[in-house]
Image (cartoon, rainbow over all chains, first blue to last red):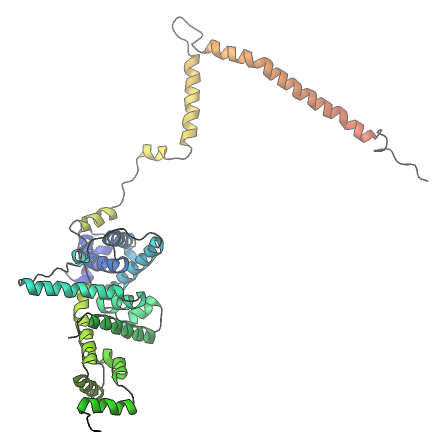
Length: 184
Length: 186
């Protein structure tokens, strides 16, 4: 379905269009929330909260071009509010990251599958070891695919700063991956 | 320069001139991977990479991250998640008249008032064999018992009011020595 048409129906309050919209974007919102909170159940609660907010403000939905940036902004704000509240109460348990991102490889050959799973887990590990600032840059630019200008608006920093921060974050991640033997 | 082979010789010369070039490559590595360098600059980076395993590993890791990171964009929140969101977005049904009445903050006060009034009426109703009603006598008794007390209280209050009234003119007359009377002037 044409995304613009879907958005039009969502704005009109069509329940089926709303369901389709939720199904289309829930993975992205949940993935982003999980990267921020590193806790699956918290990420689910936040994702639900984000969609309820969207539903209550359907009139404020942007056009298709700005939709992803808007979703990322809403989710990021919800996550930051949540993390401020959670500061003194870290989560006690969580699902393994493989279950959340389906990191277990689907390769037929067990040896290749194992190697692939180890690599994916390593990538996650490297991401978690980054500084908060660098992780957020990787999250917004490399994972969510936002343009530098959009990130500059979102973080309220100059474009040049975003560019240099992004390069620094990529290099830090590459260093960690190289140390894990990815560079060979 | 005896004993130096190709790479060692280059390193030795660089060490005594510009210093190591790996830092310079590091500054351009992202642009190189993104294909944003001028052709000449890209060729120079490529030439460095053929001789430097550490920088080659760095560029390889940058490329691997670029390929694999977008796969982490979305995650599966679980099979029932959409239903959960849709339920949460459903507008709550409008409360019934009764629940709206019950949720009023003054409801308890009003209920107590109505209950007391009903109780009094029930006690006063004439019953078969007792035309004066079940509660008439107890109520009369209560009034009779409290009447002297109320009378005494009212009497006391009246007397107090009278005292204040009788003391009022004393102040104005100023007969008390040393208070109201004017001192003789010498």
